Image 1 (cartoon, rainbow, N blue to C red):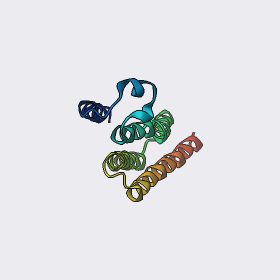
Image 2 (image 1 turned 180 degrees about the vertical axis):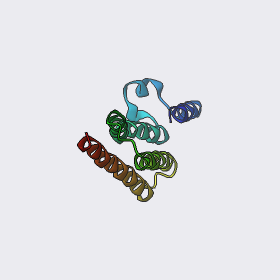
Image 3 (image 1 turned 90 degrees about the horizontal axis):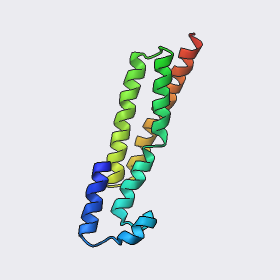
Image 4 (image 1 turned 135 degrees about the horizontal axis):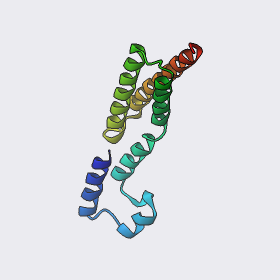
Length: 120
């Protein structure tokens, strides 16, 4: 996403669609194409942090199972697809189910973490 953001910013600057003085102080001054990717990048620091923490917890508890690995791959795929939809068509009717798949995966990992904790 950072590479795509840089490419889109360069394109918008080259097209003359950006006031560099204004955008330095106001992220909302960027064109919509840039703001969309910025929004997606912010999303990468929300629920993904929960995923990372749960993965570390599962590792620490020695509770990593094939189920946890499959769920982690499903979560990763849902995040990739969510980012693709978010930064291309931005179809909310498609984004929401992808987001919910990811959240469901996080909840499953949470349950697996509690099971690992209970097994201690």
